[in-house]
Length: 150
View (tube, rainbow, N blue to C red):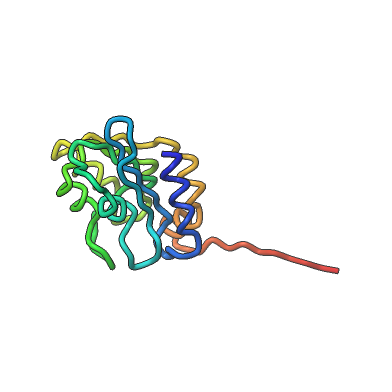
């Protein structure tokens, strides 16, 4: 998950209004693919990682900093790509606070037999997207005020 967080930070300033998300795919003890959400409108981290895989990801574990999306926007749902890839387990840093989500991805993945774990390095994942979380939960932007006076 630490590697996924490191990757997610590469999206700083490019993903808004979406969050910064990183994803790492591990098979056995090897990282076989990784990705991150590079910019708004481009592939989300999970899909970026799946596309970068040079070998079959069936049965592998996907580590992702934020719950995979389950809705259509500029891109199709990440859960569809995860299911199609036959990933065996998904480890999620934090649930998505977007009202359209409500843990639906976790429920769906569990229902079809993909094991999920939620809350790994959750505080770090929350801190990474504090502005996104505030906007999604309260509906107002995160404001930083800087004052200089002589």
